[in-house]
Image (cartoon, rainbow, N blue to C red; front, side, top):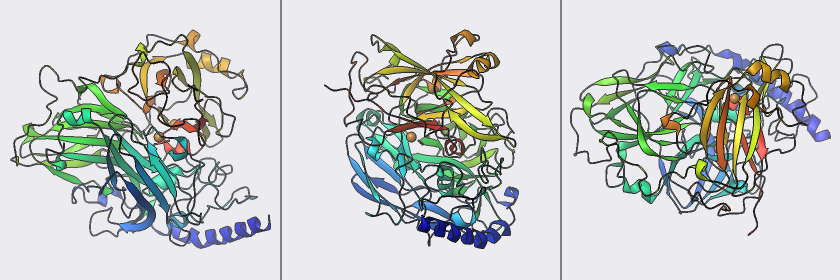
Length: 596
Ligand code: C2O
Ligand code: CU
Ligand code: CU
């Protein structure tokens, strides 16, 4: 007890020292940042094996040269972290090391205000007696989650599995079996109540999982081809001060209750692979891009002004059955798109990848992006010749070639167990005097007892009723799912029935009597394995989830994971607007293991 209150005093003194620097620098006007000066950075590559990956703080040239380097956090000294490139079946262990010590981190002191009134990692176990506790400034808690990985929950990066630099043994060893279909995964921090801050600081990277089916397609960037024709692209929005340092708002909307938490962070500057508004020189040929929205809360609707299409070949969790041609691509935080862009018709031109005015912030009814800043992502400069003939997979061939000829997506609608569990779940926002006080999944806080306990091998339908005014990208750990439909419902009538129940103790009212119109099928480019899906306001989103590996055949009803799925702390499902996730829009869930 005594130690705790001493620590509290120390923290308050630290705060006093820090406040000055928080307010010292003026915001950097994004219009004064020259665009398209630096090339798109290519993350370092790591392959499978026994890896050690260390998170630390360092300065990196995020803004163009001429500006000061920006203090960020990253893995193995880079932001974004190295891309881990593995083949199916190659087990990888990563010893995640935390060198974000109290002495070596300035971001928690100067930029990122840890809101101690949230349910958060609380490394010093401080009992905060003040109504408005100061921001925490000790060693940084971290835990890494591999988003999209089918892993044992003791390697999943459970939000309460965080540790600090002074935990012994140093670091946490996670094991990734990589026994799943090829997909664009990514890893990022997942610490309880501070994920939005730790990811904003830079703790994110790609993890590309390959398999033989993918290899046989000869996609651009395939090993026989030149790897530079395959590029990963993570889009994030940030704000800077005139010293080139990160800025993150700390004026809570309900400051008497949560002094620093804000419902959504929107930056005024676009950063791609750790660089503001970069360019990429390409040859007039096909490229494969792994696109990731790694932002806190901003959605993007990407489009090329010259009408060049994206041929989407993969979703979050694997290849589509066939390429889908789209001229516009919307990505919510956490979502990925695996696309092919053919630059051969754009010889010698340069153009910008835009973020169109459909990408409102908040989505879908907030402010449109500003055309000269958040409305632009990066520039492509197309050369006049190719270094060698392009023999890679051509998605534009007629008829459209299959991506999974011998290995079509197992459709969960074809799985026919005797009984399907359907869960009616809700998304809720709790209003305070100044705006949202917290956001909930299923009317419950994280700490309420677990309510979702599916059985291993079972297929379930989750009907998620969005009672808020925003689109929430909902993500499940452990398994991807398939979108069945979205359907409008009468929000006010449902809400009035819902208001009469106690959501912690009683089941949610059925939504069927309130449905409106027809269920809408998934968009063609969502019709594959998804692990993060947009759930729009005024709609019920239905997903089918099977608690089994994705390539389990439809007639196998008792599939198991290649590990004990009941072991460890369990899994979570949550909104991937990480500002929401940090303030209760996340629930634990556990899978019950079947015995054979
Ligand atoms: Cu990408 Cu639970 O997160
Ligand atoms: Cu995840
Ligand atoms: Cu949300």
